[in-house]
Image (cartoon, rainbow, N blue to C red; front, side, top):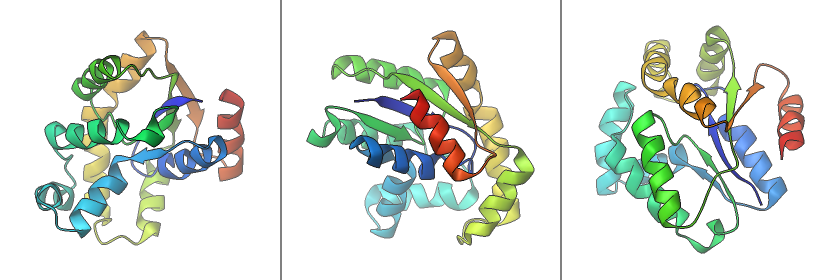
Length: 182
């Protein structure tokens, strides 16, 4: 079973494609966004802390996200395969993830980078209708992505694990491209 990491800007389709591919492969789709939104909705201590960052369009601190990921990868359904969506978001998280995976005897097969032009991303995110998706917050999130997350592309390219996929095509075509990789 595959173990994949999905990266790409907010609105690139990571969640949609990761869920579809995870369902096809019978493995868990591990979305840090879903985990964080659940913690916020349930007003857990982590959720309350995370909400303040999310409301500003900033990334939730590494330490909070890493604790969630460690717990999730240790669950029984994640032992055979998984798709990580939304983590790692920066090089220090990627280095942490490499160390964590070694400790728990996991590895990843590929890192999938969904590429989509910025103006398409803004339109997609505005179309979702989430309360935190104002144009100002979206543009801030894209700027944060460029500064903090985009360096992952080079990090994984150097490790010969990066596969870029055109995310600016019909959903079914993106899915077909991903199935061909797996």
